[in-house]
Length: 108
Image (cartoon, rainbow, N blue to C red; front, side, top):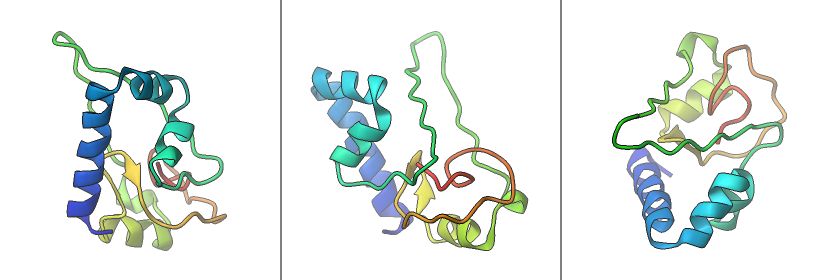
């Protein structure tokens, strides 16, 4: 999956939350379950937190610092497999070198 595919998948996820209140509730209460129900992998040990922006409050998700990523994780980011809050790469038992976020624990 390239970065354009990831962006499209992320857009589809957001669109589904706007059109399907049940899915939105599932995503808010069980992000891993909701994301995997769409066919995406969520590596073991990954924590996902869903925050909803409002007109008065916007959240910005900062990606991990590439200097803190393992070679496998850095390759995933470079290949567009960890972007837009959705991790599309293979699951791995490899431990991160440090940091937090979508790729440090395997991604989201």
